[in-house]
Amino acid sequence: MNTDKLRDAFTKSLELDPSVDVTELKYREIPEWDSIGHMALVASIEDAFDVMLTTDQVIALSSFQAAVDILKDHSV
Image 1 (spheres, rainbow, N blue to C red):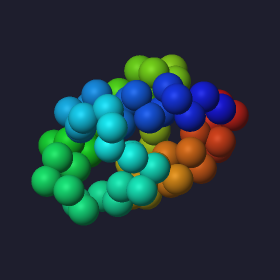
Image 2 (image 1 turned 90 degrees about the horizontal axis):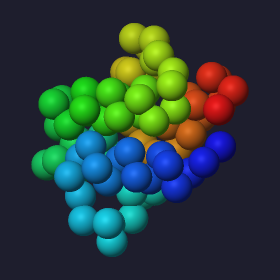
Image 3 (image 1 turned 90 degrees about the vertical axis):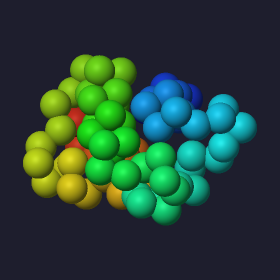
Image 4 (image 1 turned 120 degrees about the horizontal axis):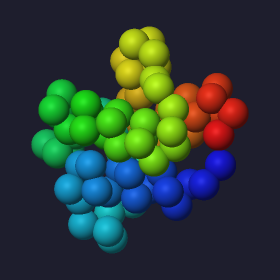
């Protein structure tokens, strides 16, 4: 699993400064990660890893670690 690629997806889709530690972020903890930012993050993860998240996975995507676990389910 390429966590650098995942960090990049978080940083770019949420339009964060690269110095932000995305591994500590939680959904709706920062203004950038609202419902619109969430969908941008989902699209970015799907594009970066060539996967299609299920509705349950989109809902469960609440942190960086959750994203890692979801991608493991996709054998990434």
